[in-house]
Amino acid sequence: MPALISRIKLHFFILPIILLMFAACQDAPDSGRVIRVADGDTITILHNDNKQEKIRLYGIDAPEKSQPFGRKARKYTSSLVFGKQVLIRTMDRDRYGRNVAWVYVGEKNINAELVKAGYAWHYRKYSNDRQLQQLEEEARNARRGLWRDAKPVPPWKYRVKKRN
Image (tube, rainbow, N blue to C red):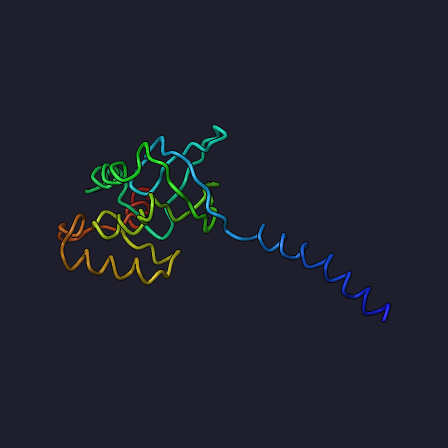
């Protein structure tokens, strides 16, 4: 009987620790107010503790500023988020140290809104999100945004060409 009591006590001690560790590992949403829109897929937020953080929108790639529709993509992103409180759900960190995240204003998924409006590609190299894929196909078929262009050049190809 004392061995059973010891095991029960051990479970009551270990279980809360395991639960705390699990909770700490979850991608907890964070928030901040958008204070800068660098381009169609990169924003800077100001957290409540006055720390700034650059965020790269997950799963999408918007045209570069010097590409056709690059300025329009930035302007559209700005209209959706600038000065607003956003919720971010970090998915990864990129090679520049930026958080790569889903960004929300209320219930609105900003990443999806950009693809839906035709101001960003679904970045399939880094995302297999079916919703983004579907939204890109719909925007392409409806010739919205950058899909009005006869042969839009994806930003990842444009960047490689520009480097060379």
